[in-house]
Image (tube, rainbow, N blue to C red; front, side, top):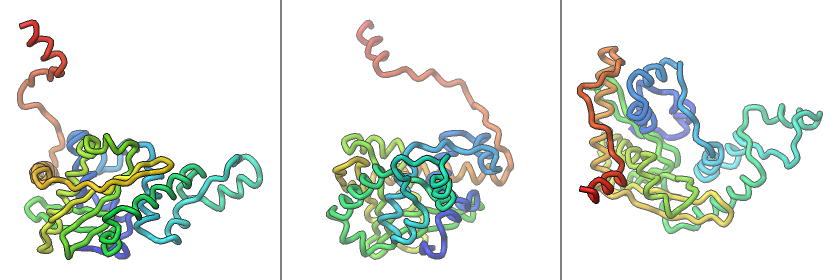
Length: 271
């Protein structure tokens, strides 16, 4: 099922676990374990928030929504702002509930947005659905999976996800560590429920700095296949625990301590 952004605001999308699991919630389970995940579902713990979230959300909003949405959700903190003064307090009250950006953020935001709009994929991106949610039920698990690509082009089986990065040269390794391949696999599995084959999963990487550059990367199909296996295994375990109510974590057998590569090389040299 493909749900337009107008029918499912982003706040509702994020609040829909555990009925709908996304890449993010799958990663929460895999990284933190079953006991923590149950506390997360019950609202007793919250995941840590990485730095730069506001800037990334601002870039997403600027490129995938309209100017009115941006103005409603973000405010530019004036240089020399002092919340203790009468004028400062009035500004805070007038912008209550908005995410705050600095003037430097806005300068970088303009450069980053311009870099994305100048990239080779932009003409295709402009034909895509922005912020649409793709969902598919997994009845055997008693739950569903969902993904929200920044841009979706069903006619070509393409998804584009915008990613802010500090260094393009390190983006490849970072993208795997951050689970971007898993995000694409979830989108592909959901689209298959609508008879849409995921042919291309693109990452639109843009630097967060003045004079920003943008590069388009495609996730290889063999990486997507591996991520699809991971996704199914994690979702199956969550489904089993939801059905059984058992969120304890136990170790089946003693595991050998992982030895870093540099130590293995030293041991081989001595031996």
